[in-house]
Image 1: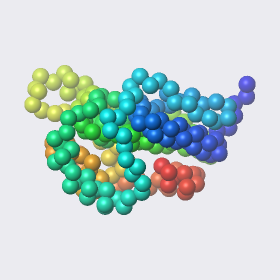
Image 2: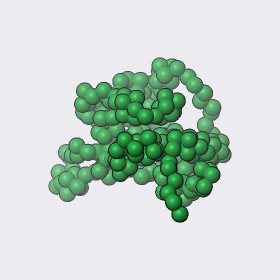
Image 3: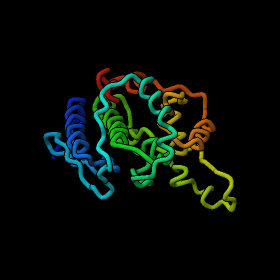
Image 4: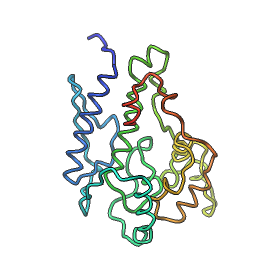
Length: 234
């Protein structure tokens, strides 16, 4: 069977079907918690079915519709609710989602998270599909370089080998290729609005230690052959 060219139209169809599937699942109050390419079944018509619900869970309390709120308004509400969120009991397990598709709230061991963890993973998959389209292949981009956040460890859930073999339990050792460091190298240093979702003071302190004075990469330069509408979704 001849290989078909993977075009932006294919990608749009796949991401649309994927988001429809995600909406159906989240409307049923279910979080998948392990969205990755291996758990997506795509047919010849670019229709997507999500599979492997082994890590999925229903939420104790259904999510209220979020709508599109101003970023500052959302962060102000989260900061005001920080003490309340700190006192809440953990409802969901913490070590979930394959590392390269793991969102910051899971990396930072937040006690309360929601369906947004699946959306982060979807964004990672979208960036991979962009790099695999024919426009990039024709311009010499290697599909093997498609992954966005390629950390080799993920402190504290799966620390680096040096940390695991260390005899000192008091010193945290974080590798230079830790998952959160890799994310910050691409998305840049985070301000108070960005970190408003974090409820644990020690996690906030940890984020500050990772400051690299880096700025968010420009997706227009990173993906120059992609339409602005796709980059807006990303």
